[in-house]
Image (cartoon, rainbow, N blue to C red):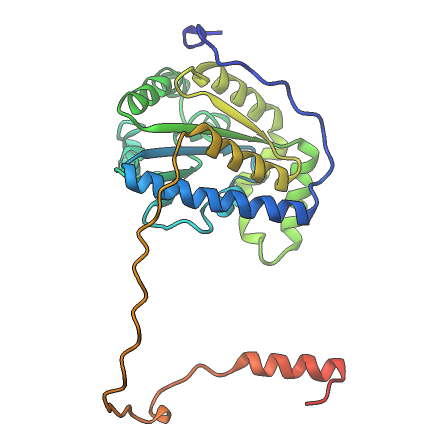
Length: 291
């Protein structure tokens, strides 16, 4: 299994397939977890903790939607999302991990990597964007790189979002029909269908080399996106020890009495047209309501 697995963390059995989580139950638990995430944010800011969360997995497995729910109520000054584009020619000539180092957290920050240095073990490996030597070197260096992060006091969590080939294809076809999400599809994404086994092999090689005691992989079953979001948020909160910190909420001052200042006429300003009023009138007319 490799030298990094002498003291493997205990494995949990693969959960059985389950029905989709009911919306009302999901929304109630989501709210509770998001409230706790805000508390964890305040703890990180107060203590100077540094947290790195890596999100990897199959295309359309739900990584992006999970990140969106996690950060929905967090301060962008504390919780940052790092989603790097393809490397430039200059970056290609650098040490592979170099451009990721610049995005690591400072004190009191949480960085969520929407894909990460593991691109080399996934899409770069499958699509031939790196050489065999570069891939082999990455599998040797990644555990060492992450050991350095942990040794320096950075909290590292790595999540792999798993989805079946049938569900992945269904989500691709759903995106293709949705004008709001068509931008999420690219020829590279669709290679996931024709190269399913290649990606499976690359993922298994990656796990064997980089699932370490100091930075283990945690698999998130994502056939049901609602469940996967709840599960990853709960795990993140329960696996990072943190304490409630009372935020320093400044007092709301009383509004002072007017001092006689006369403002210019409102007609002198440019206002956004009241499109909402037109929409409401159109809906009322369609429903037969009286004005």
